[in-house]
Length: 275
Ligand SMILES: Nc1ncnc2c1ncn2[C@@H]1O[C@H](COP(=O)(O)OP(=O)(O)OP(=O)(O)O)[C@@H](O)[C@H]1O
Image (cartoon, rainbow, N blue to C red; front, side):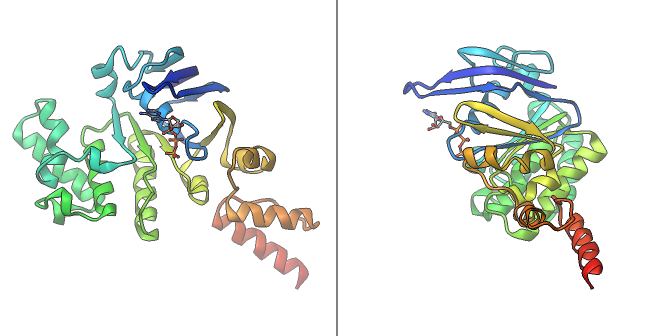
């Protein structure tokens, strides 16, 4: 679905961002998380996939096409939630904002209404459809942006820091919703986040970018046990991985878990064996 090979971008002020090392490859139906410290180039990478930027070196293919050259064709299949959702919410009301793309695609009034009501129900924002987006809370704005992004049932959904500024319950809701879209509709997900503790719940594959390179990729477990690479990339593993790696190094016979459920099982077994 997406293939990015060793790109280099030069911003107008001459800032150069390179993303070499491993190729960035996303398969249909995959859930991919991009990790990297501030300024590593995550948003730059997403902007190339979206066709908002064109690389001066390297190649970007989305569904076999170069996104900056076939912008409309590619973007028709992509839903996006930007880091700063204020920049993407443009409708005078929440309803109009979600209806923007379906109307742009010239769907009939009834079909537009059907789609808006369906996504609003799915995301749980039916009661704010009449509101002016400007006055919504940060979490509500994220939900509205997501509703707009999925209104046309895109094959690929790109989310830049979707969990930023959400309370724990809203994070959980957002995660459940993304996983549901992936499971039920086969939506491919590309997500950037700084919240490493959420990654095992939302990723099949994790890419780590740092200092102009894609330095590693793998399952959350494969990536999070590479402590040296994470440290070099100024990242920390999830608390659970850190804690259980420490216990393993102390000689306890355990497998390092990535999710709370796995950790509970490990602790249960461990505590039974010493009781
Ligand atoms: N429009 C721009 N003009 C000039 N430089 C830019 C522009 N956008 C990004 N950069 C620079 O490109 C580099 C990569 O930025 P980018 O936003 O892609 O990083 P990021 O990994 O998304 O960071 P964060 O986690 O802080 O959002 C940074 O050095 C940044 O200052």
